[in-house]
Each structure stands twice: as structure tokens, then as C-alpha cells.
View 1 (tube, helix red, strand yellow):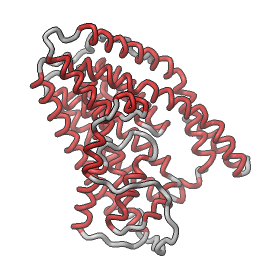
View 2 (tube, helix red, strand yellow):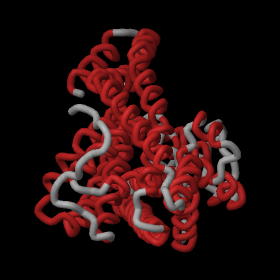
View 3 (tube, rainbow, N blue to C red):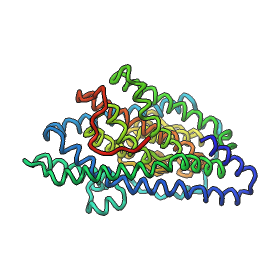
View 4 (cartoon, helix red, strand yellow):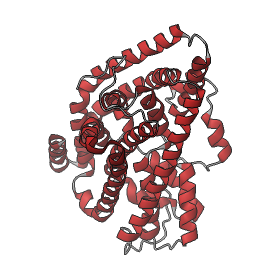
Length: 405
């Protein structure tokens, strides 16, 4: 990370803007390849582990019980994340004093109006092969839940299918161990590319906005880790050690998807049952992106402050409620939050072009919210395991291979 920042700074200061952009483009090849490799693994890994995890639950009542507890925690965490972002942006006032005139240009982001019908129908895949090809995690989860529940309901539990899924998971995790060899190089390239194009000066220009958001994320971490402390007590240090590398990987690559295989293999070693990890994590990557949700309220009200637009308490509560819905199913990939924000701004007569204010530093902010998403989903798996009284004090015996390191 340090070397990446230094190299990026040298490129930014020593080369022309065109040269720096070209150099950053070459560096980003490494990051792009790594993220494509991760996405290559995600779909078969989610399907195989979720089917096995559900099939190994005691009965359909256990599946429903874990599902209800998982969604209940997600809703609570969402409310806390959105509310904390709302409170902190009011306390810090990062956009106050800018007094920008109403913009004439538009941000030109592809957005579409949110409708409940589109959201619900999008949950169900028309084709599982199409869903896997597009890495539609939520659709893969729905299909996997049906398959896992059907397998669990069969008398013989389809041993050949279960064995095949376990072997697929083992192969995917082994591939993950190969892909993760690139991780240090990817961390270097991602940060060097970002600093080369944006420079360190942009941090100074947006210091109040960036600092305020990271302070808010820090408070959210405190809340989430306090909840996990109640569950694991003195083992909180071991939990932090378990999720340290996934957090760092998500932070440097600005996508929480990169950390998914690490969490899938690391949390069972901490003592979270694999069947619960396999159930909670895929759902979390669609429903429980705590850092991204906090950013939605923080950035939306920052834009309102920058243009001197006052929103009533009623409007702010309505915005929070709208974001509670629109943030569900948000992909764990860079820039997804911008699309949610862009779809929210017109509803409250806020200028969509305000996105231009934050696009320049969005990658720096995406690093923090991606790392927070990893923390939130890890805590969710721990909390649900504790509610189920299945949180072990020692690692489970792993049925599949796990990534080295």
C-alpha cells in the first residue's frame, strides 16, 4: 500500500496529465484482471456452498429460522447505517458554506426509476445460466435456496449432488488460493493507479468531506464491533485477526467482492458454522452493505448542503425510508452507490449534477465503504451464529480446501 501511494505520487508529479493517465491505465490492467478472476469464482462458489449449507441444516424450520434472523439483523444494521450517516452529515456539515449555484449540466449517469415491481421480479432468475453469466448474486441465491431446500426435503438428500457441490466448492477455493497470490501486487497497482490520476492534492480539497465520512465509518465500525463483542466476548481479537486480510483486500481494491472467498474460508475457522456462513454471506452481499448504505445518506445530504437546499425532517425521514429499499440488491462492486444516489436525488428535487462533486473522490471513499461492508457481513454471520447458539470456540473441521494465507 505504501509503495503504491509513493509510486502513484511520483507518476502524478513527474509526468504530464496524459502520461499519468496512460501509466495509470497500464497499472489498472493488474487490478482489472484480478477482479475478473474473483468474479469468475463468485457464482459457482455461492451456488455450491449455499446448496451444501442449506442441505446440511436440520430441517426446513431451521432454514426459515436462520433466514428470518439473518434478514432481521440486516434490517437493523441498515437502519443504523443510514441513520448514522444522516446524523453525522448534520453534525459535521461538510457541504455547508460552498453555496454553489444551481448546475446547468447533468451528471450523465445511467439511472432508472426504482419500482417495487422491477425489484421483486428481478429477484427471480429467468435462467440460472444467465444469472451466473452476469454474476447476479441475488438471483443465484434465490435459485440456490430452492435447490438446497429441495435437497434437504428429500429422504436420501441427493448424496451425489451434495458430493458434487462440495467438490465444486473445494475446487473453487483452491482456485481462490491461486488467485490470491496476486493480492499484494493488486494492492500496489490499485493505489498507484488512483494516486497517479487523482493526486494527493484532491484529498486536501475534499478533506472535510472525506474526513467526515471516514469518521462516520469509524463510528459505524465501533457499533458493529460492539455488537460482535457481546457475542464473542474475549475472542474479539481473534475475530479481528480473522477478518483483517479480507478488510485490507476490500479496502485496496475498492470492492467487497474481492474479500468474499477469504471470508468464506476464514469465518468457519473462527467458529462460525460453514452452513451459516454460506447462507449469510451471499445474502449480505446483496442486502447488507453497511458502508455503501451510510454513504448514500451522507453523500445525498452533502450535495443538498453544497447547493444550500434545505430538506425538512419529513423529507429526510422519507429519504432514509427510500434508501432502505433502493439500497437492497445493490451490487458489491465499485460505483454502485453512485447509481443509487443518482436515482434518489431527483425524488427530493436535488440536482443530479451534484454527483460531479463527489465522483472525483468516489474511489477513495469506495475503499472505506467496501472495507466496512466486509466488517458488516462478518459481524452478521457471527451474530446469526450466536442467535442460533452455534458459535463455536474452536475451528470446525473443514470439509473443503481453503486458501493459503
